[in-house]
Length: 92
Image (cartoon, rainbow, N blue to C red; front, side, top):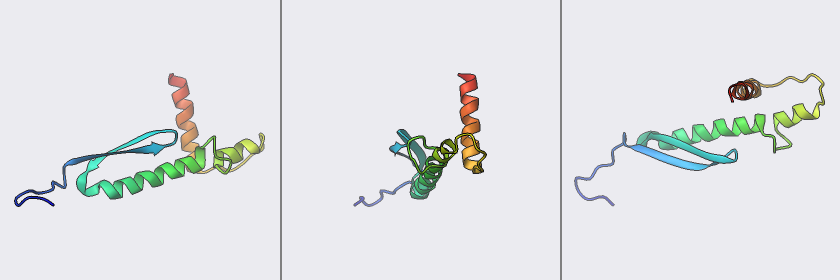
């Protein structure tokens, strides 16, 4: 309950944190967009996990590893993750 004259500022920053991909996800948004932004972020993280998880035997990456050197088609999401990984390895 708010006192008379108190207003919730929909543009005030909101910070949400949760566990994702073995680390902590941090999402900074405005109050008015917090719920939809969290849903969008969770969808993106789930897509990344489904494509590139080394720990999920059902992930796309696990399927590539099971192919044992045979050619397999991969998604744009996995290709993007692999490119980012190679780039990160090159600069570290």
